[in-house]
Length: 294
Image (tube, one colour):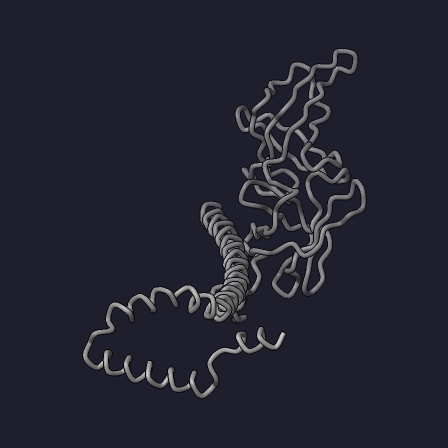
């Protein structure tokens, strides 16, 4: 047992230190003379895997940090771009609404010039929801000269007439209201009739016309001027159906209003006589003349 321990003992620590110092000195001398290039290369190649493994955690941490940073930046950029897209869509819709409103107002202006009468553009502010009562409220009233019985138009045709007025608003009875009737005539041949509301925004009736009346589908109906409310020549509707009824002696004739009564947003309030023209701000021609002695 003692023999094994003696042989198992290696060089002493002093011997090992001396050998390391000698080896280091020899390597330094050889390196100074440039004789260790091959050995240095060999040792570098041999140590590279160890260096790579030692640096791997640092590289992995940097890659993970860069990945998470890039993800946060992309998420932030994505949210910013989504907000920008939503804002641009909102602006586009707003501009589109303004463009359509501008087109409608241009059509109103063109219509007023064609009719050669004084017009006042008004906007709808409320719609009567009572079944079979077709009434709307507009934002122009007696302070601008609007009065009961005044005709109301759209760019396409007759809308109705004013039935109630306040200083800042007016109530308009649509031509499709069951209580409304308007004198019309067939534009093709001048045949006179009465167009009565049916409670349906897309339908008018022409009662009490004989079965042999010269009325055809597609005929344009315009105001006849009778009754003193609607001037002559305003478009009202188009005949859609003519059905003779021999047992009643009168034909069933229906028409469709030309004005889009379920979609209008602006209307034209019309003055048809110079005496009823109101004083509008900025209109010097509408100011009443000063009285003078004869």
